Amino acid sequence: MFKTIIAKLLSATGFLRLVRWYNRDRILILYLHSVVDLQDLSWRPLRTPFSIDLLRRQLEIISRHYTWLTLDDAVEMLSGRKPLVPNGIVLTFDDGYRNNMSVALPVLERHSIKPVFYVATGTLNNRMPYWFERLDYAIQQLREPAQVHLEGRSFHFAPGDRDSLRESYAALRRAAKEHFDNDREFYEFFNGVSDTMEKSSGKALAAVQAGDPCSETLSDDDLRSLSTSGRATVGSHTVDHFRLDTVDGKLCADQLNESKRYIEKVTGTVCRHFCYPNGNWNRDVADAVAAAGYDSAVTTADGFNSVGDDLYSLKRSHMPQSSDAERLLLFMSGLSHLKERLVSATTSRRALFRGVFNNRQRKAA
Image 1 (spheres, rainbow, N blue to C red):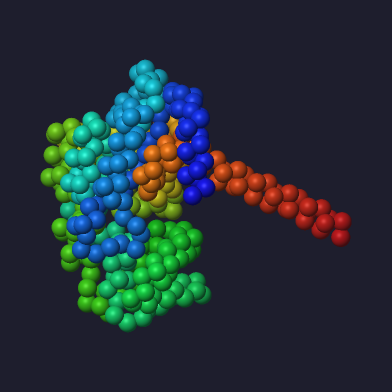
Image 2: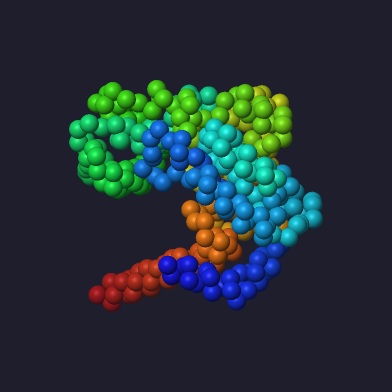
């Protein structure tokens, strides 16, 4: 409610329009994952799915204030090789869901939007559901209570209590990401958990993934069609969706090169763009992306991109689940993140001061 009031005030006073003018020479990149028609769902993920109705309303609002660009054009502009256009914006989709093409793309085309589909090539053609959806589905098929143990903690899953399932599912994901610093071990853990739950219930997402509105992935034929028609750009998201800063240099290079070669073989066009899985990257990973022959790489760090910025650490903002025009435009202005940045900076300064104070006390003692 508070943000809505602030957003409406900023819009009514013309302040948001002023901010857009101030940022007119900067490019905003937005990203989404799966986009679904809620009426088509055969099961409802614990994480709130992004609906096509919401996206439709958002695009109507955004298109009145921003100019849609392809990522190819955005990279040319950011590198200084092409003139900027005012308030340029790019839309990208991560992971390679088929609903990006079947559900979202027809709506995008009404606004002349040519998005980027970043695909993890090892998941194409429904080879294997993503671990988080496989686990989500397995949890919801349980007939008896289950527990998962990790690093001395127990996570309880009670069938029939959706709120409790959602909380335990989110807590387990967070704990695992903090615990495992190697994605091979991370995936082995979650595959083992899902295996156990699937054996208990006798149901698995892999059995219904083909045709599933949530988890079905693009096929080789889909990629070929998208590339040939020019409806979208196909970029790489690795082979196995590994967080590249958690694997060794050879595996990192293999993930980058093999996914690029696969996409180029299927589409017959050069794969120029890359997306870091989970947004994880460091300088060594960025250098490996450049060495593999990509022209750009996107992160999940919020913000705008300016001429001269590093093309291998481009900022992106996740599309918010809001259809309120003022709040959506407030988000896109960057002002909605100001409070979080100030809180984060204040917390960091307090921690620094506490550390200095404690050191002085220890020395005095």
